[in-house]
Length: 202
Length: 319
Image (tube, rainbow over all chains, first blue to last red; front, side, top):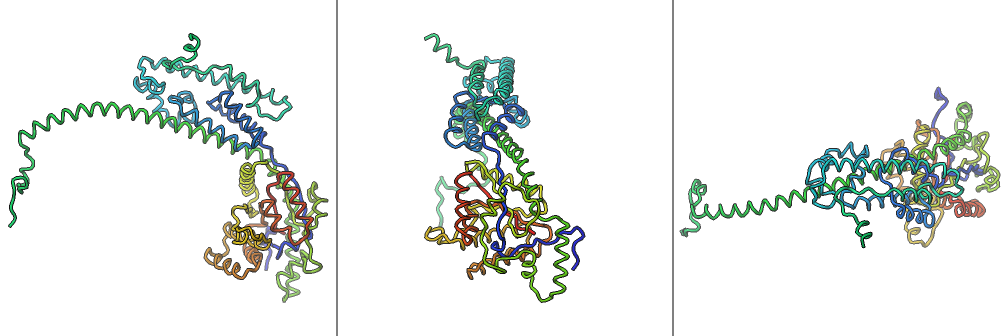
């Protein structure tokens, strides 16, 4: 029988595990979950420009769950997805993400129809309001995009703060970051009822 | 004879095409009413269509962004595991013998085989790896475990089984994900390794273990080996599926731990792999390996399991 030219041959096994006199062990630590969450945050909101900035209350709830309960990156991701699902239960919420490239690639025709058609334009807002012109809608979308860009800029600026911080809380949950995000007021589309003004009048 | 009443007269076919005048008037009024209703229904239908479209857009947006999140998480996990995989590779390269050594061992075996024609293959292996049957029965040497924990092996020692303890995340879902990615990456990186992942859930528990009456190491070890044989055959089929199942069933009925023989048979026939890398849960390790040796071994692994969130072992069965 000839040996293969590269010196390789079949796997040779012992008949049972007891044949070994012992084991040689090497211990390797895998990356901790908060580190993964940190990288996920930077990948989503800094590299990929994820279009939705969650409100600070939602972030606080997710942080509480992360720190106090499970310390699991997977569970936190599921909670983010849950918050995302709750966000999309509102009518017309898709307008806020209309500038995302992935969504535009698939749904640009329907989104364009909702912007151009008079009846359809009023539908996402919640009122059958045909007074809203397509120009106003486009302006609102542009403002929304600007707001998202400001939010992402804040998140980028928060990175060095996170690096200097001693605690292991991911930057997304950092109190300064939440406060900064809270400062950006949510965009109001034309035609939507204003709740704050009513309460201020009272 | 059949009597026809005026209502059920059998008229010629063309007569049904012409409707009486009175009926026509009634139908025109009806049609008007229906048209009016249709207009209202049509406008409602349009609205519902728009609402459906709007709901559809929202749903698709959610799915797209959710998939983006999942993809980002996968990418993050893979990036985070790259240094671990390179570390594992270094350890495996150091722990397994080099190609020259393999060739030398192969030539030595051939020489032995020619001189002692009657000796069996097991005997040949015993010359390479002195087994327990040559001397006293050996268990796991805990001292050797503790001594070599932090040091990578500098040379290949056939008497020691190379094991890697992976300290993962505290949450089981995270650990499963990490292991899944590790297996995928290692399969890509080491194409000459048969990487097998044995999950606790994939082990088919026997009736006694399911009832909790007796958790015997023998049955657990059988299941573990059973799973290992199945997965090895799945990656490189030596026997046909039906033949393999029949053999496994036969072994099970005999209640003999001869799965290792089947694994040996597979190893003798396979040519595309040099080694087997097994990902195993720490609890499975405790049950399958630390029973016959000494209680020190099992207590050592049990303490590690509770302290450091160890989730899996990497066992290399090779030359």
